[in-house]
Image (cartoon, rainbow, N blue to C red):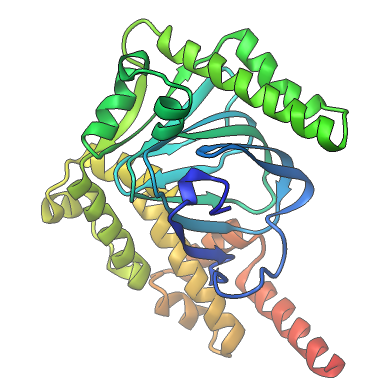
Length: 335
């Protein structure tokens, strides 16, 4: 991934699967459990990925870019969330009528999250400024203004623009390739170059500015990351939006939308997710009553805890504890 996708050219900082850090360990299972996902190196600074798959588990990845780049994504279904330190976007679900974009400066981080069991059907192109300007020879004034502005200011921008039927058809052709071996590789590269031209043509053809959902300065991005780490360390300490807005000097819009797009969930949803992950650990490793676990992770009412847990995990806390305990007993006997 770090050798192919410009978004992660500077390295991977963190990989979590179902709330457990796995960046330094062999992955316990693949990202997808049904269908396929392909990632291709088209040229230096130019990558293409496309997938029609079912995600296996809740994945969370943080990586760093080495160069200025832009990621263009057409989603036919599914809702991967991409966000970075400086701007943010939730990229789905979509009907392939728009292309979402993420503009990143060199050295910035981006995080991606995928919800287990969800279907993903999309294609994504990532290209660096060096590829566009040095390898292709495109002049800066030939690029969308929002692209130049973000790179010049070392800031990020997330948004979307409408795509033509021709562009949508070109993206769909990636899923219809029947050739094999070197011919398949050649066909993928040909389609990738064609799709890149079509996407930039659609982007430039927009009358007026494209929809930019969030634009954050580097200092605002840093504040949101600090808030995220604060909540991750102590999810019960989350204040109201008004309190956080006042304490951190961020307006409500940037606080709410910026956080949601950076980390894939609203502040409240993120806090609940962290509480549930902590609860799963307590349920696996201890025998405390469900009501005590609920109180320890920050739920005042056990019924609210049970409802939130079932929504996040797909089963009640009691059933989760019994299932995990049974699995461990089986492993002990097998060992």
